[in-house]
Amino acid sequence: VSEPVVLGIETSCDETGVGIVRGTEMLAHAVASSVDEHVRFGGVVPEVASRAHLEAMVPTLELAYEQAGIDVRDVDAIAVTNGPGLTGALLVGVAAAKALAVAHDKPLYGLNHLVSHVAVDQLQHGRLDRRVAALLVSGGHTEILLVDDITSDVTMLGSTIDDAAGEAFDKVARLLGLPYPGGPHIDRVAREGDGSAIAFPRGLTAAKDAQRYRYDFSFSGLKSAVSRHVQREQAAGRSIDVADVAASFQDAVVDVLTRKTIQACRDHDVDTLVVGGGVAANGRLREMVQQRADAAGIEVRIPRPSLCTDNGAMVAALGAEVVRRGIGSSSLDLGAVSSRP
Ligand code: KG4
Ligand code: ZN
Image (cartoon, rainbow, N blue to C red; front, side, top):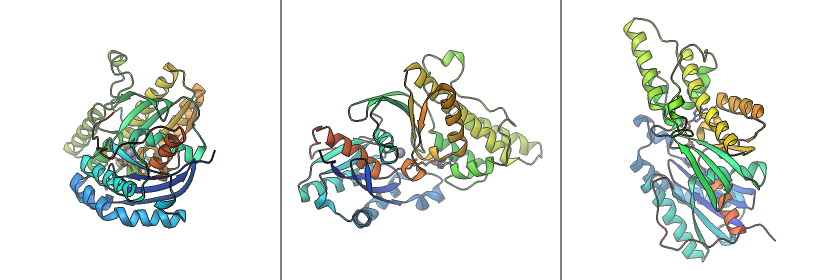
């Protein structure tokens, strides 16, 4: 059987992504980001993101056609992220996908953003043909998933009960006077610091949380602890050691993320872990997840950073898998779902 060729569209947050794949082979990976327009607000502004998607959609589609050397007439299906994400942003992608599907008489597939973050790994490391766990960490989400089958059987084991991991990085960076988005800056600055300099709290790791919040995360208390630390130092007239604070904060986040994820793998007898989302670019996270997974005999699959951040190829990758299994397409009244599945 020949592998399906699928065009994928992603607009759940601030990246306008269009990807084209043939099975697990990536043919196009075009992304336009509106991140620069959000810098002065210190976070993604939904209205601004929606308008940017509208402007970037056609140019990004054209760039993808150019990269692939084929266009929408040559694909077997159109896949689009229809949730979770910012509603207004999602609607731009869904509307574009419907227009293409109707104009070119192609089947339409509305797909889950979180599952696409897992499926994208297939474009780099080959087909996921076994049960895996996934840790997804970005500015908008922080979840541990149990994936029995990417097309049909995904369970969310846990998620953040307040801030997403990337959001915590961005807020703490701001406290330390680092630019938005702060994750990469903390990553860089922390290399010069001591991660054990300050004992910041590990959210939801107390014995009392071991059942109810076993796979859940909380980063707002950590952010407040960093804020209190900075204020205390300033009030005492001491200068803040930005590198030590950054490294200690980062270690606290990474410690909890990796500890709970490995626990989830152990509890569910899973021997393969996929890590995705923008925070998966973090050097300390990559190092610690590898160390702890090695110790537990778990194989780690982390796609390269350009595939970890939001993009259209991830949607196309999941779409190709869904088409390959002969799963029915979505109807043209497909809507957008902002909340988690
Ligand atoms: O996946 P992504 O590009 O967009 C969404 O949020 O959906 O993730 C962006 C987030 C931001 O919060 C950014 O600060 C964080 O990922 N990030 C990092 C690093 N690179 C990006 N966080 C920590 N370390 C990094 N190296
Ligand atoms: Zn994402």
